[in-house]
Length: 270
Image (cartoon, rainbow, N blue to C red; front, side, top):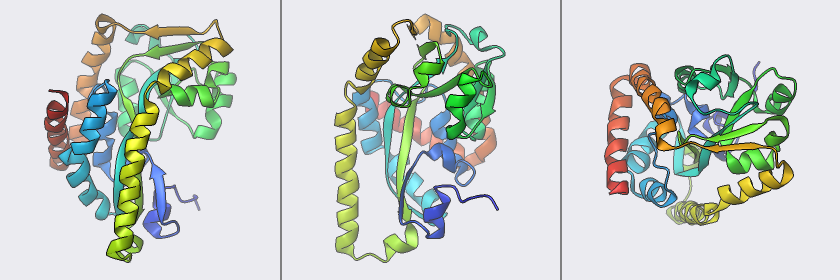
């Protein structure tokens, strides 16, 4: 028997709370894969915070989808800009040809890296460092603070800022457990989630820059590439087919989520 994934433990009532990326709930809640549509989320932290704070899709539509699966969605929040962390520098999609790129087991993330020209390779997180070290894979993606804290830079040679995504995380609870709480306790839980959200946004300010500085200090020969808008253009063109694939995977429900997110994003970035 396969061990329960972290999101299925609160669903089954084994855990009461969990903090988990919607990427891992893609099989359970296909619409959650929308967070892997490249270049959908804004790059500026202020706009990103405004979006997560006020989005109808985030705060009204997703809680209903999670509730259908026995989960109480307490909060979604951004964790940081995702970067490509590879053996060799990446400046254009062609540089990813024949690159085995580790991805989470998420269908849309697989489609994203296919569109970018890589060979997406689902791999458990615990095998990523060793996989890079032994050249089983040649790349992986994560926020900069994660690349630094897990020392992935030790077994790679380049970091590329493509601006294609910002890692999203969701805090959820077992719904039966949550519904059994008193109104007073529910308020304590929700107030804590709201306070943590604001603290996280504040804590993240400058975090990527600090992490990058630590990486440069630890490994001065590391190639750091912050792509220009012109260099990002072909990646953005490839992203269009990923969006179409998302709608194909999720149907009308996914399209409604995507359309609402675009409305919410427009309001947050005006």
